[in-house]
Image (cartoon, rainbow, N blue to C red):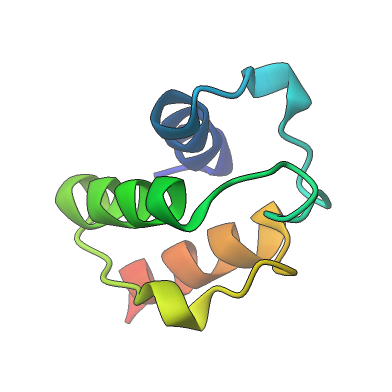
Length: 76
């Protein structure tokens, strides 16, 4: 699993163009809804086996913080 794999998954699940997904962008500025976030987190769990609760990822989280949570969970 790479950062690019996770970004591609986020793009796929949210419908946002991959080019618009900068690591320092927040979920709020990208207008990623809570429903989209849940969809992303379910897909992360299915593909990478990492379970993250939606309430652990507040709207002010950056994409890099989300990626860091996924990669940390994969190593745990």
